[in-house]
Length: 476
Image (cartoon, rainbow, N blue to C red; front, side, top):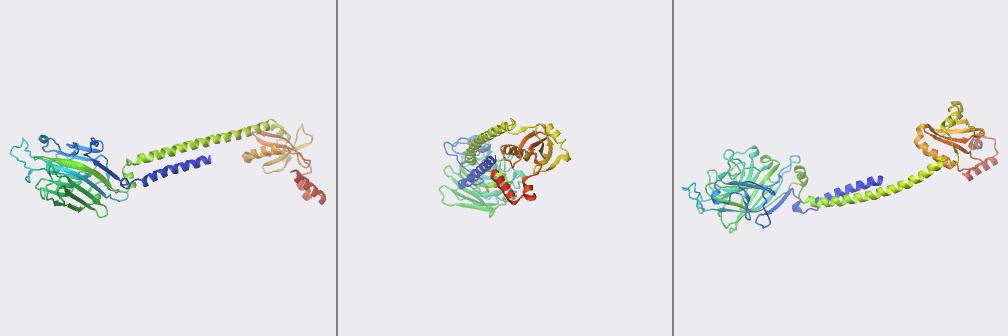
């Protein structure tokens, strides 16, 4: 059994080792708290809404892109939508105080539509003018799960509404990078990239020379946050323009947002219509893996195909090895039992000394009376007794109750060994009893005492003592 317990311990160690190796051998990109990459223009991307992504209100999977607002021109009036990652993203950990660094890269198009809605015939939306496009889109971090505020459209970019767009609190807090194409009363220009913190009024912004909205231009953006400096940075480039535009500001993520956030995109239009389409998106976070496991109960997707086969192999090896050991143990036990049964059968059949009943020996010693007591041995007392089938007195050794467990083994050993010995200087074992009341041995009584006493205290000559000692050693 000790070997089996040792094997179990070793197997548990192997399984744990497989788990640790799976953690340490993961590629660097996957060792982060969260990492994903979507190419919506790929033909096999499928409809990711309600699977990998959470699509709200007018957002949907379009042809080669995520459409944040309606792509039907006549129905695009006051359209708003959000598309965010479908699972919570750990941003900071309350237990350790650590804040994630993260980086997100994406491409998008804002496509102006030179249309005037039939409900507003007096309004002329000319996409070549500053007022012909509306309203813009944003990359955001907000509470999880994402929720568009009611009555959010137009200049609020599906981030806020008119009641909280200057000072959002509680679950309405948002940190965003906006790409604004319409000049509203709270905007700095009609073509800029800005950073919004709980307000649609950008705390930091950079004007963009080339129009963000164009049928042909693709905008490339990198947004990053460094937990060491606490600075949020956005870099932007428009195809056909080699210049990079940059905006940055310090943001206390622990103050502004909860521990887990929704990450994604939002967009909105007003009377003038434009399409907001995300073409590709990647995201990675550097929050330590131990923090992620404590914060997010769902394990990383790469862990399952690594850990499960390793654990399965280790478990099968454990089962097979334990089975082999159990079979061997049964064989060994069976052999031991056969030997013990054979010896017990010989012992109880009365091969050699006679088997007495307990009451016979009790009567022979007058109920094991104190006056019949001859002395005390290593495992019990010795009494003088008289048996009808024996000539003269006998010595009856009674094993003590406190040594019953060990005495039983000593008892059987003494019966087996001494019953086979025959020597004129050794007392003969005459009988035994294994009653539940006690274990007893019956010896021939030596009235003159033991050989040991005669050697040390009697009047024997030194020659006689030497010969007696030599004889007993030779036959022992």
